[in-house]
Length: 530
Ligand code: BGC
Image 1: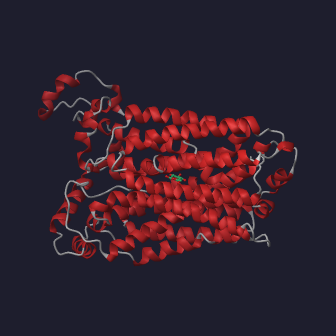
Image 2 (image 1 turned 180 degrees about the vertical axis):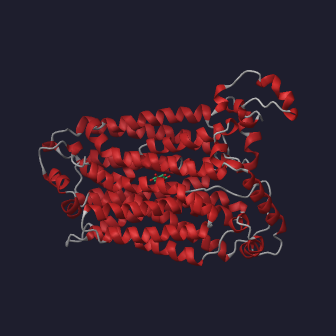
Image 3 (image 1 turned 180 degrees about the horizontal axis):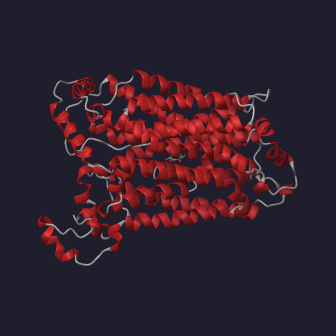
């Protein structure tokens, strides 16, 4: 997942001497494989679940429903087991995040990535060789553990190894790789669907072994980050790695800063409890809200289930997979727009513009389906022109997501937490994201069955709410050094500044040094007791 806890104490205020060395380039390739792997898992499940040979083997009930003329168009794929195939990965991912946060700290970034790679490989083998539903689901759970470990360690690794000036770009590059992974999966599904022997789905699931293998190999060959070495007391080793990755002998200032950052971080004995203190509340609320909102845009309804959705709309199998490839490509290209414009236009403009575009696209899709796609399976296809129009609106929706909530849902939490809560904040961010990804994966096909075209109105309602959240509650963080956020962003905001008084935990502090504050902390503030 993009953007892990940056561990240098200066987020752009200080520029240290650094070349872009081969080791830094290798680390970019690492990011690519970690992101590709996650994206591949996101994209592959929808394609295989729309393949008749896969359904026949594992979900015969659903298979019969797809043939059955009596079932509602919207309900053909409504099956908890089928949804569990997709969603189990995210449940496993969010559980393993807690273990990953421990191994990342205690063992280092490199071993944690290696653990992720091994989980990915085992999961891929089980999936490609699956004989029954149990093997399939256990395979997905192992892949999920890989996602939990990789998404904690890889972004952290990247942000620690990257020179400050390319750290922001690298951050969104990770999201770009997620989208490339999704597109690959769509393309491969499109190809394997044409295999007549009924084993195409095995190839789709098995090819996840390519990014998994690359990640595993990468984790063996890459260096550990200086930050992690220093954090674990291996100072000299940390210094020599820093020299190698920066390509210069002039690393003393950065080295001292890393030592200082690690000292400060060690003083925080209970990182998660610290996160709940009153002065950290605004960042926590924003991080959690952004993750929930990102998932309630409805993006993964499209990313997971586009082929199934297009099938539901009456597209033939081939056309459904083909359309998923188109939306996947739009996702990749539009992420590029974000990389280019996020530091020029700013985060708020992108989110607000996208809010309007997503809202209109979803309402338009709902209107077309509401008017033209009847429940009655006898009328199971949309007229061709309208079907194309639906794909156009889906692309309009996906593109605006890709330059807003996709990357920014990750970027903003990673840049607003102060150092003392950054890594705990990142764990919570990953966890809440996977939790709500799980909810959408598990519920979407049932929601489609019950809400019918109204599902798109449901998501558009959320887009409306989240746009108002951005308008009033999300401060602009463009071009502000990370460690200056408290002064320049939070203390200036009409609402959040109320949380920014310097009282420890927000409670009244009755000791000598804080006597002058007693005056205004006289009243008991119940919220400070959290
Ligand atoms: C989200 C994923 C989503 C992807 C789509 C990411 O930012 O976290 O859930 O599948 O974007 O491109």
